[in-house]
Every structure is written in structure tokens, then in C-alpha cells.
Image (cartoon, rainbow, N blue to C red; front, side):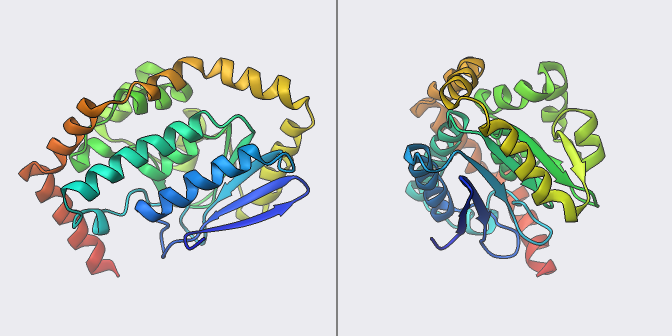
Length: 254
């Protein structure tokens, strides 16, 4: 794998995002991640997973620099794959822990939200969904995922203003479950995963899927009309202008 690192130890799979400086999501990374989730779900020797990033980034979200230059077919394929991978992860039956070691906005936050438990590093990091300020449409399935953890009222308010939260704010609003020092992040993640995998696997997994039933159903409702709506907004001149400004700022920081 080019964009992920996999280590398996004591029935636990550690999945490390490993693409560039900020682990920005592109088509290749999503393909590898979706394929790995499917393989692990079928692997009886692996009881659960921990996902982590590197340095100061869990994942910065979508790779806007690369995506901006995608042609119409490429961006259509990307959005379709993105929604499919999120559906795969939302439906992933084994325990999943997010060890959020740094920044995790937008798509990075979506990945973390799919997990059963989120532990975040202390520090000057941000997490949350800021799609609307970027000019992107929020699908109802993503709202369902966000509100599953935050509650509908708070998820609605945070989404329409694109609010990004500090680790302590995220803890207060139930977006993350623990905030710890970086030296304890992996230890706490492994401890929580061990708590989950000690139970009868079938009882735990089927209960998880039962409790997520409505959320899973919301992701199965995606269709061509949704993709067309996302793409129409993507190519809108106002969105392209916002994206170009963001890309220019990102390029200047490099």
C-alpha cells in the first residue's frame, strides 16, 4: 500500500494514514482504505482496528489541490468512491478506534466519526465539518453521521456555520470521547480496543449494527441524483473561486 501502513499485533490492526504531510484524501488513498477495511472484516485473526495519522495530522480531509484539477469523470468517480468508502466504514462490524493525533477537519473528521470511540491529542488542533464554508454541499447521510454523536440540534448548528472545534470543545460536545497527552494516545486506544474485543464477538458486532441501523440506511440511499447535485455545486464558479483561494493559501504555506 502506498498511502497506508498496517501493523497487526495481538489481534489488533493499527492502520496508519501515510500520505504526504497531512494525509489528505485522494482517490488512491480511499481505494486502499476501503479495500483494507473489507479485507480486515473478513480476517478472523483480527478482532478490531485503531486508526492513526502522523506528526500533527490525523487527516486534513480531501486533497483539494489534486481534486481541483480532476476532470468531470474523475471527480464523479471520486465522490462516488468517497460515499461508498464511508458507507463501508459506517457498516464495519468490528470495533474501530480513532487515535486522533492532530488536525482532523472535514473528510478527516468523517473518517473519525465512523469509529466507535475517538481519542484526541491535546494541543492546538482542530476537528469538525467545515464543508459549507468551502462551498460544498453536505449530504443528508453525513448529517446523520454527525448527529449520531452530537445530537441533531448541535450537528445542524455546527454544520451550517462550518464550526471547527478544539480538542477540549470536541470533548465537551461528544465529538471525541477522550483528550490525552500525546504520549498516552496509543496506550489509551489499545486499552479501549481491548475492552471491546473481550466480549463475545458476534453479540458485540450484531449489536453495533443494530444500533447503527438508521445511520447505515441513510448511506445506502445515495443515488445519481445526489452525485449530480454534488457535482453541480463543485463546478459552480463561486465554489471554484473559494477552492482556488484555499489552494493558493495552502500552496503558499508549503
